Length: 353
Image (cartoon, rainbow, N blue to C red; front, side):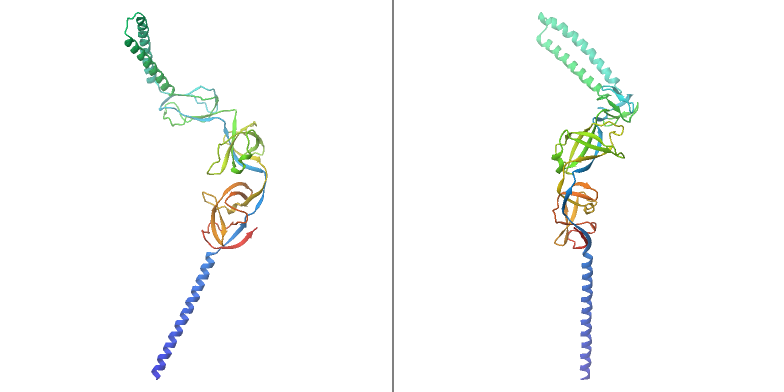
């Protein structure tokens, strides 16, 4: 009896220990689950997308370029024997700028010209003989064939010789010189640049939605870097279509103002008046995910993070226009963008309406 009581007591102790262990395990699991839940829910700031007035006064980036500017290169390889590239100086169209060694080509040309003289003399004699039937028709035609062949060889040789010379393609100013006499160059070697002095063009880009508002002949104002002075230009052309990568239209204007500040290569801020948009979607710039090739934002979808592609338009101060990808009422994240993943549960620190 006593032994039985001892066994029962031991069993009760083991049973109690078992239930205590299970209780601690459940408690620990609940704490772990709670910790994981808290860890998975990121505290972020959010912004509710809404429409607002987008002012007609917009500023876009542009650049000044010489209306005509080309890289000067040889059409063939060879050794330079003559250089006439006065840096920063004006040259007339057709001026000889570079000459390659071509003595061998000139010698070959003189040989062909001598052959031509002989063949022309033969042709004259045979022409007289033909009139009195002193030569067969076949011999006469062979002489004409040889004569034309030599003329073709001379024309080809002259074309090759012309390729050993580089002449100014138009009136303009020479830029920096990159070669000297004695240098051996190929057809890809940059010799110098030349650009026109008179006309300067202004190239700039505008968002697709404003493209119908750009017309040939319209005036635009601009200023160059580190200057508050406003200059004028007149639109002369636009690209045929919208750039698929940027969603922008390239516009070209001819500068009508004159100033020493206006030099090719300068950056410009172009000011346009294109009409107000009362229903523009403007979002904080910090909502755009950094280091992404395609622009994305994170929206709240059923309480979880969802990544969407967007197209942007005009930037104004701390906000940027969204042309496609969002709707009024969408909730977008403005903080924690680098830590959120697709499907992450969302918990808000603040929501800006």
